[in-house]
Image 1 (cartoon, helix red, strand yellow):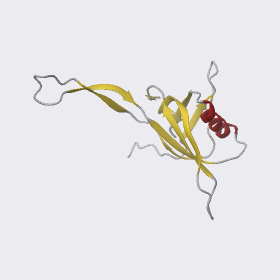
Image 2: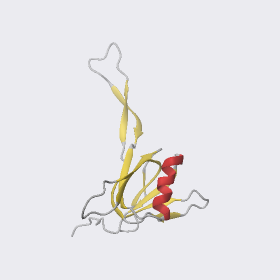
Image 3: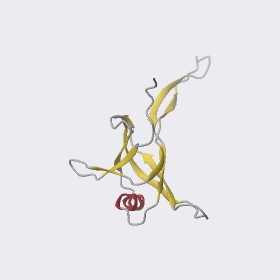
Image 4: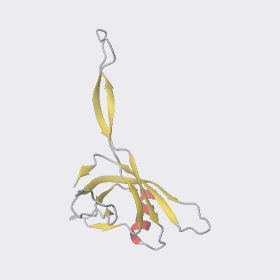
Length: 138
């Protein structure tokens, strides 16, 4: 039997910055593409090297995106749009459907883009989160 975790029921939560911090789920998330690590490269080649030599540099977790069904008046969604205007860094948690595992990271809202509006569609937005620091496992 597989131990795979189904994605239905996964949530992403936004911290309020208080102490203790309270995390609230962002409504109607359609998909999440979390930030992921890419190591920098430090060239340590020297005149006696027979080929380029490198060491791993700092990891850059880059950006992640989530798509939401846009709900005008929703406090968390509008709060994220407001965060994009102020550049505030907040803590986020992605909690897998098992309720025990996931990812935690700090990020700022790099982009909040409403998707094109079309016939037979729903109002959606793509939110880009730029990680600041490491993404950790929960």
